[in-house]
Amino acid sequence: MHDHNVRDDDHVYAAPLDVAVCLAPLDPPQQHPHGRGMRSSPSLARRRIPQRGRVYTRRRLATPVLLGLAALLIWIAVSLGGALTNPAFGSSFAARFSEWARAHGGASIVNWVEQEWYSHHPPPVGGRPPAGAIRIPHPSSPVVASGAPHLPPPSPIEPLASPAIPGEGAWAPTGRLVRGLPAVYETTLRPDAIHTSYVVGVAWMDTKLLKATLYSGSQIPGGGPFLHTAPVRPQAADSLVAAFNAGFLMNDANGGYYTDGKTLLPLRQDAASFVIYRDGTATVGNWGRDVSMTPDVVAVRQNLNLLVDGGHPVAGLNAQDTSQWGNTLGNAVYVWRSGVGVTADGALVYVGGPGLNITDLADLLARAGAVRAMELDINTDWVNYSTYNPATPGGPASGANGSELLPGMTGTPGRYFEPWWARDFFTMSAAVSG
Image (cartoon, rainbow, N blue to C red; front, top):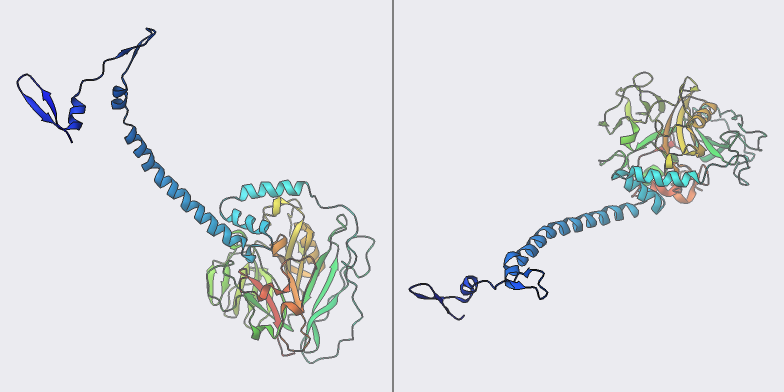
């Protein structure tokens, strides 16, 4: 660094270069060549605008913003990526993205997109179902008298559409035999007289031959570990006869959850409840009126209110409702729905299929003999009922020897044997050795 002389009246000082620059007189203003005004000198402009400080300030502000944005993008990538690869969120990327978006504040956007799709794909009116959709029961061997307690087989369901298709509403035994007796019967029929290309399935379960178990999941109800959770273990598979979906996500179920001796979510008075007892019997009822907590209760799964009561659909059902009985895809009225009920003699009946509004579901459950019934899960990815019939009596059930109630059901009979299945479900197993 060189020194420069700075003069005052009596002395000459030596000043460093940077101080000398600061003490140097400003360049005089310059006349515009055309006389239109004065221009400040470049040195004055530089002194008035601290450019380097402004750049530093902008960088200091931008750094946390960029870091926050990067963290957000990483979180989205991890969270959404996990959802898109998790079959428990649905069978397709679209379903998984919808589930993820709904859970993270995007429900209104998802509903709008689905509504737009549904508005261009209304349920067809009239028509006939695909060939073979209505199953014609094959002649079966007469049931051999058995010492095992059992219920009488169900009576046929009167078809709703006319003319009836052969086999419509007629029951056929399915799944493995229990003590030589059919424990499950199934039938198919059209859900109403207008949308006659749709077919739904109905299953009837003998609660004297079968015992029920509630399998809890990490997603529904969440938490754990649980005594019974997916996958179905080999020992349980040896007696498994049927498995079917449970209800809504718990924040939509408006009810509680009890299992393994613990109340995971408070049980709501008057809620529709699927109750399992220590001996494996199960029923459906109004909590506090038909069913309540006793030492024999081992599991309670609540979902909304009763859909059928006293053998009839409850009053006030609205066929156009898309909120009280669950948010449907795109607020569609006719969607995949499922429900379960109990008959007067204690059998369980399950209804599931496409093209169902809430009044159709209630009507079908009542027609199947339910005196009390509740809605289970809805929408395509969550409605599933499977039965199992191993080639060897007493052999293990598996996806390979399972059959779905309807061929259009999503998830295959193997979904209950997958460790990733995070939703709750019910199983029906042989109550006595086969």
